[in-house]
Image (cartoon, rainbow, N blue to C red; front, side):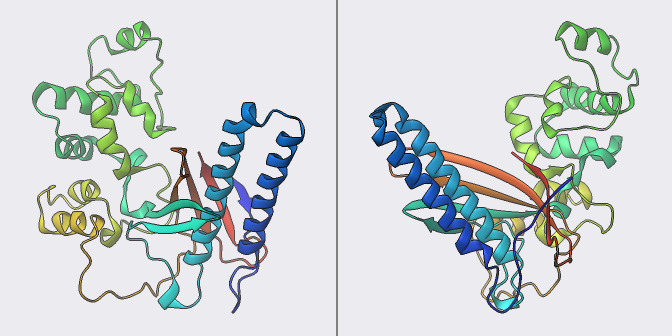
Length: 284
């Protein structure tokens, strides 16, 4: 686990945020000037655009951390998964915060929870049975699927026989498809945390169906879908709870005016310590 210092928190907020934005933008300008001096601006244009998008993504990430750490409850970002639209030096950025405790802890799932997950995501019949058996076998190294080891070997895949290391490993189990994985991925996590339980208020609708056994068409799941779609309630109360020790994913999407797109996902955890207030648990 690597730690990332975000700056001093106080009445003036995180002093590092504007400084980081300034450094990143100056780096981008210096890169562009160097390319022009070398007479290869056209050839490096794509790299310059990428550098600009990455700088904007870093700035948006820092802004999100600042918002989540705000001591003023009224200004603190919530964990409801709604988009925060930002503009960084002319680049459009959207930041979304996901509560990892509103997801399904993948490596704690049993046979019944796997069945509820795959069924809620649309799997039926024999395919559903294959998915459940395949996911269980992947973790336990068991032999629920006849010839399963041979089938994996023919694909050049070695079953884990232990905990999932990435959500993407689900793609290797029998019966999985890209579409089904795309529906499942936002609802599962490898970063649930060692303490604390499932938080239904911030949960992905599929996670609600699995963790509460209410089903994907339950009132809570429907209400959560509406909230994620931006249908806000008339009265909203800002979160007064501390986020210390709670794994959070910040997803950033940035676009420039020329069709350039850059995505970044970072799992962070607030430590409650002034010396190193934030850990970066994973980044992609």
